Length: 548
Image 1: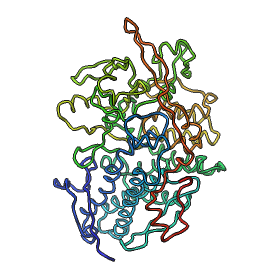
Image 2: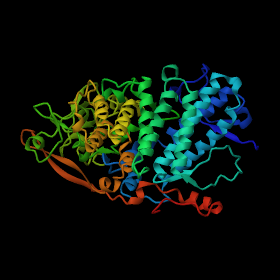
Image 3: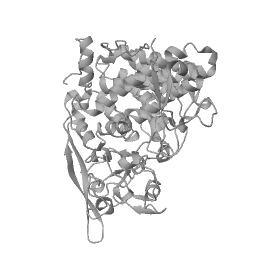
């Protein structure tokens, strides 16, 4: 086997380490021969850290923006490459699919090398098990990324599970979706077996609970109509059981404060990453905060999402918001589901002023949240509050970095609860499903009226998932796997103009912000054409995604 050189971007300190070396972390790439890496536990750990870090370094913008803009809960006016995606103007030479495809396969090849070596390092004991389990998890993670963006409807991706030399022919045909899903399950099962429990693990390293959560997510996607057109109940039963296994483990719990989930470490967070402001950074705040708070507002909430938050009536019942209801229309933000105010900044809501105090959001024509920078002001009348750092303006205004310091959450326990509820609903077990939906609604800071089994229609579940997981990069994938993308995404998106009378009392005028075009081919991103051409030189039958 030829020697190769590994470029290891050493992972950020929030990952923790298996050793206690104080000089473990470096801010420059380290070059090590393959034989050195695979014969030294500390260097092998750096290689595994590289797999973890690369999911952030090379796809940060994609995860923050594309996976939200793909849905109908946000829109954009300033991030042109992502607007291209949202409007269906992408093509096989666009940078977004190229980055996603090529980065994932780079990491998969690294994982294959690590797995082939770590399997034989039994003398490393529990350190070997942890590193091996993490590597199995990360290979599954990258294959899930590929399947989510490029697969589905029985189309998988090239499945490479063996270590290869650089000169080996790695150009193989696409496997079926089911074959790829089974490979993901196999890797996650290995991770579950090898990894320690969350309580025994270093914060933010893959652990048994995280692997169980990703298996439950994969099973849900595989059971959904896009990938299960015959509605095979066995797939739903399997998905339900994988989610229930994690619930029964009691590894995680719902945090009492919904808004606080995204700002602090708490028992609901499962998998996340955090900026170290040096090697790895995420810029969520720059993308979501008002220009009056030094944001650039790359993505903003749509009226379609705002209208999804229920209204609590005087009799205590929760009903759908309705612009044709005079009371609703005159006070559109009054008595709404508390998750609305925790997730979205609207005219008259309270936010920080950057000096340790508070101010009111003003999106009227002369308001500071519009006039501070017209280029970056919201076109819809709303800004994202969920996950926004209240200290961002003060910190950056005094010369601090523009990167965010809050957790970028990739999985939390609330999703697992909803995944299980969806499986139960698909299996016709509404009485059991409503119990789990009500767990989400009865969170102490939310306290929405409980639903009865006969009130939990499929549409109401879909809405519950939409508001609970808003801006968490689920909506795009959810609508696709439900087979509803053509209906939901080919539409106009709206916002409001806020008009003030002589005494400053607001009235709200609905407006169309943009018209989205979503061709059916957008359900799968195009495989980069350069890769298709190279693979076809060895495998002429290799299939580009339909429509591209």
